[in-house]
Length: 255
Image 1 (tube, rainbow, N blue to C red):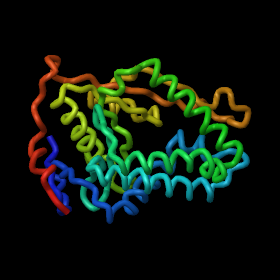
Image 2 (cartoon, one colour):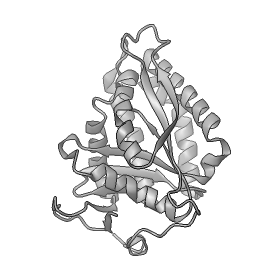
Image 3 (tube, rainbow, N blue to C red):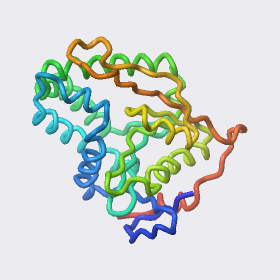
Image 4 (cartoon, rainbow, N blue to C red):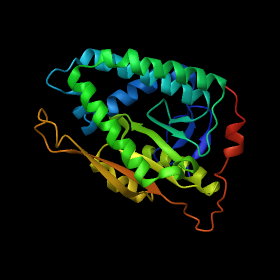
């Protein structure tokens, strides 16, 4: 089980990684970690690199939307990191409740998504993004249905390439799954890289559905990009878990 604290400490390779909350003043740094982590991600390659791609606008769109999402998650204590933001994880709790600010920003982002975001993409990028959204939403509805509302979701997981293979991704994932277990809830995620399947399997996630992108796109000359919907059921089959160590103390920390 990973330790939980609110302060960055020097990392000892002989000690378990320390999971801590992301701070608002670290959002930009977190965004850089995400950009570095997805540089060679198959899904982002598919969405970004169209024949008519405007990569500059695509990047600015990613930066703006990523900043908003990360800041909102940080505000609600749903964004966690390790060390000097060497890795990042954001999650959604089960039965999440939106407050007034969430609803206001949600409406603004909805208007942005309809009127501004498409203008930052080329026609090819917008078409691929729409196709992905349709297929993903269908897979989620068919596989999870209303159960999705009662599950935890591992929304984002990224480790800077310079700090991979040190157990940071595992520690951040376990932080979420232990919390889900403690409340008797399953956890789900969408994996954008088929090469990560073994990693998620080792943490208890099982592939429940897959979608293939690119097979029907005349401009895509590479193998289809496979996106997996994975689910981890509660490890304690009785539905009763144990609260992660130090969780109460972590939730009382003030920055």
